[in-house]
Amino acid sequence: MHNVDIRNVSLGQMLYFVKVAEYKNITKAAQFFNIGQPTLSKKLKSLEMQLDLQLFIRTKNTISLTPAGRYLFEEWSRRVQGLEEEIQYAHVLQTGHSKSIVAACLDSFRPDVFFLPLVDEFMEDNPDIHIRIESDAAQDIRRMLFNKEADVIFSICYDFEEKEAVEVAWRKLGKTPHCACMKKTNPLAQKESLSICDLKQADFVCISPQYLPEYSRMIHAMCATRGFAPNISKYVSSANSLTLNIRSDRDVFICDKYYSDLNCDDHVLIPIRDSESGFVMAWHKNSGKPYLEDFVETVLWKYE
Image (cartoon, rainbow, N blue to C red; front, side, top):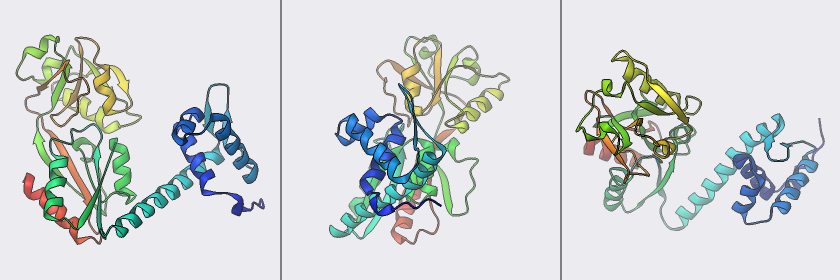
């Protein structure tokens, strides 16, 4: 066993290491910390020497984690996240808000359509409860919920319909048809509504199964009900990237009215008949926070 004096490993070094591992890029991490790239590189080298471990594999243009580095990143990132949340909660206590809820929303949603009004209404009726709002990709806010980093999340239906969890409850809300997003110059854009069959000749932009397999399965299942397989022309890594890849009059992607289209001036959302989407609210069953139950009941009453 290596005799490493961990007293010489600082929290700052852990933060530098975690951020470089997240970005996979020293320049971007240096910009985040507002320090020079050479300075950050020296700090990483110093950490590796102190630990007697090679944490990164460096080439001319890339940097990646070694198996040892990947293990420490997984462990340290949780600790760093936990420390940040503890400090944030200490500030909450200092301001007198001993009751707090962490609510996370899908970053491709339009928060003004349903999420922010819900939060504002609840906080108006419960001024003693502090609500912190987070926004991220579907897989990330789901992870936050299961890791107890969030008390309640609002995500897309297809991401929960096949999930089972003992400690988490969820409810499908805000029912709405699926929509096909396309350029205004697409011939289908003149229709008030579409059938799935109308999309047989379309080129689908899809979130990669590598990142969100539930989305890909949903697209294939919708098309299979009408006897065809979708022609997927592009895979992207996130829901926010879908709108950026509608480049031709044949390109479409599937969403619903809650989707935040970054190019809405150029696009239209056409409802798809005989389809159903919406959003899911998921929360911890036994959070130990009675006021979380009040928040959940408020949302359920609003949408049911």
